[in-house]
Structures are given as C-alpha cells and as structure tokens.
Length: 243
Image 1 (cartoon, one colour):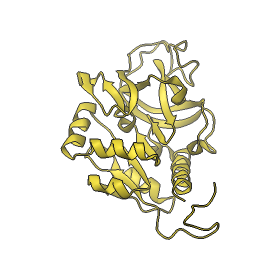
Image 2: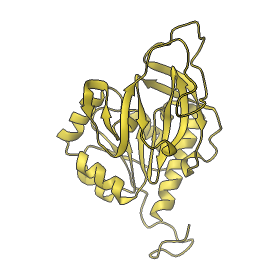
Image 3: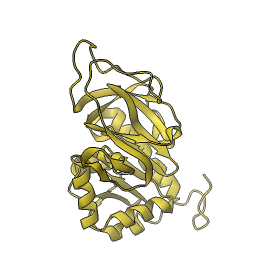
Image 4: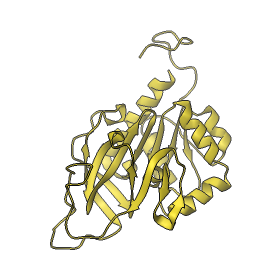
C-alpha cells in the first residue's frame, strides 16, 4: 500500500493505532482485549460513543441475547455511531453476537438488529443429520455422530471452510478449528460475502467479509494460536488501512 500523503514511506506512525472494543455489557471484553494486546496494541474498552469518531478500528464482541444486546446499544446511544463508523470505511470486526447484531432482524425474540448487513439471524435447528446440500454448499464438519442428536447450543470446537479472500485470513488454514458458543446464526442475503462456512445441523456462515466489515460466529480469542493469528491479521489490516 502506498504511504499516506501526510507520511513519507518508511516514516514511523506518529501515534499508536487506536482500536476500540465496544463495551455494552454483552461481551467477554477482557478475553478480546488480552488477545489484541498480544499484537502489541493497547485497545480501548469503552461504551462511550464519542470514542468511535477517532478510532482506527472497532471491535464489537458479544455473548447472550440479541434483543437485550440491542437494547443496551440503544441505551448507550451507540446505534448511530456504529453505522457512521462502518460507513467511514475503517476496519470493523464483529465477534459472535457481534456478527448477528449486524443483520436486519433476529428470530430470537422476533426483534430488529442494526441493519448494517442485509439478512436474518436464524435459530440452529436441532437434528441428528447435517444438511450439507444447503445454499452455502459443502461445509467443513457434520457435527458429530449422525446417530446422536445434536445439542443446541452449538458449543465447542468446529472447523471453518474458507471460501473467500481477505487480509484477516492470511495464514489461516483451510478447515482450521475455532471455538463456538451459539444457538443462532447469521444468514446474510449476499452469499458472496460469506467467507467461511461451518456445519452443525446445517451449514451456516461462520465468517462474513465484505469491504471494511469482517465478523465471525466463532470466538478467535478462545481459539488458541489460530485465533491469535486472526487478531494479528486484523491489527495488521487496521494498521495498513490507517497508514
């Protein structure tokens, strides 16, 4: 990437990279912060909407209920600033519930979400056989012994079939294993933005990537070395984008 007009090639950054982790009391914030700290950055964990205006990159983590999380974002007046940040073109990362909240609507509580990514959040169906012929194509794992019912929530390690290209995927192995905890999954309308697919009862979007928005259904911060590599890639991408 060419150097910024305000910074000569090879000249060091004049300020540290600013990465904001959104605190709306719905995420495992410390785990995400510690994972980012391994990259050498010091993320800012805050629920202050004004912090997004000067951030180089934003991470929206999340666990728990979609409707409750949306209520928390509204109370903190974060909905508008999140839309503005995504429109700015700066790198944005959603994690687990942070992916689901990007969509238009969730079946959980029949509630509206942020509406940044067209699509619907659906409940994982319980079942004993994976349905590998869905619109997302072949997925990475059947979810276990077909004679045993699959339990909801989907909890534990599962593989991700990469089917896209993005800076955050540098060095991420095909069919690499990541850690999941969820009962719902994102179903974006634009399947070309689905950069990774996992299977548990049905094939679902486990990695979304379109322009400056990346989001995962899995938890990179709980996924060992491959998850840390994902965060390192995100920081490298954010650093390049802000250069």
